[in-house]
Image (cartoon, rainbow, N blue to C red):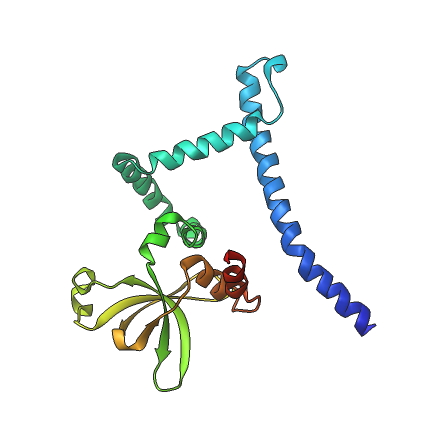
Length: 203
């Protein structure tokens, strides 16, 4: 029974990531096609509608939104709309958590988290993975400024969130990992060895 159970578990571990990825893509495609497909049918006659037009319209809308986010005026309007959500008691907690999660993987955040580092914890020999978010002391709050201080973000494993800590430069060591590898490795607590596999796959 242990042999059978172990192999079933191994099979699930192998197939579930593939299945969940395909299912999420399928869910997105069906949801987009259903939602925007109905709107398109209102405008176009049924004989002119082709399956997939709803999905294509969704991708086009998302692409245009991405372009608009480069415009200063649109970013300001979006930020003001976001502030309304951040002032709603229950919604602000859910929205901020989801927002922070997706910000991990956005191109903008990758520019902000420029350096992946290892942070030493006292004299214990312990080290944690972090991301330098601010290396210029003049851009830190006045009470945090120091010639030898940088701001490092320490993400938490298996949950959304983390800590922004002020560290002396002597306590951090640059790592040969990019943002995506380090975040994937940290969020899974290193269980999958994702960073090592990703690096092998790039070679």
